[in-house]
Length: 471
Image (cartoon, rainbow, N blue to C red; front, side, top):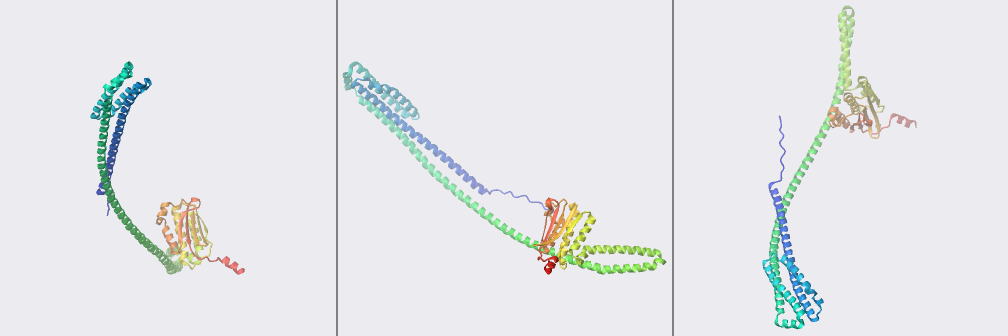
């Protein structure tokens, strides 16, 4: 059966959330344009106010220049000193400069330009009359000036100038008031629009916040459910792993028991039968040695095959349950197996296993022996080693079994997949005894070190007991 992988879902922001985001952005942009428009209006109003103030100042200054010129002329008439004519001499130039400034400031107002033209005529006429008075004074003296002043009305001209200045100032103020009113009206509309935009933006943000909070709550609920599912799965996996580990250790124990039973049956029953057959073949061979030598030769070949079968039976029995393990103990069995390993593999094998272990602990002895057996088998298959060291010692933690080789070492992939190197079975045997088994690099980073630690109560060695007795 083939399974096709489903395409990954295309996660996109929902359309209504996108619309809310775009709406909020547009509202903020609109509010920005409104603010910019208000700033431009304020800038224009400020410019108009500044222009009006400058126009009023220029008009007042024109009035002051005319009055100064007239006053200086009176001082000249009374005293006869031309020093008083200073303001009159500079007034014309300054007045023309002020007219030019006002012409520029009032360029956008035809009405004011018309008023400015009338003001120019009045002031220029006034200045012309002042200049004529100076000429008359120089020719006829003060008496001639008095006679002229009796028949002319200079005050009316000044009143006309003041009135024209007042008119222009009033019109400028009216223009300023009109601009200010228009600005205030626009400002009110802008404020109301800004308030509406901000209120709408706040509403959109609140809606978006509600959506985000709801999405967050949903995600939190999903994460919580996923976490609960993961916890349940981990608990289930842990229970199943423990059950499988218990089952594995049980199967290892049952396997060893069955191997021991089968070894005993092969050794006792099959051994006895083979021995009986060998004795019968020997007796018949002796009887037929003189009468029928050909049959005797066949029987001797059959007996040789029988002896090979007996040797095969012995090897099978030793593989199922080493006899040295039951007869001479764990240390002797390990040393004998290491000697056979070195002889068959041409790999030098050093052992240091001379410790006292109760051979009645069948589960302990067979587990340690199988760990050594499996370790040497892995070394022969994969390590390419030249030397192997097997040590079994007792410390404060219990029994420590180490099998160290100088081969190519074990890779991380092999450690992650221990079943391919038989490490799982060794670990389960160590767990069966309540211990641990670790696999790491050998000394100086060369080769591999398999270490099994089996907790046992610390018991004194026989030498220590004898020393205490002598003391």
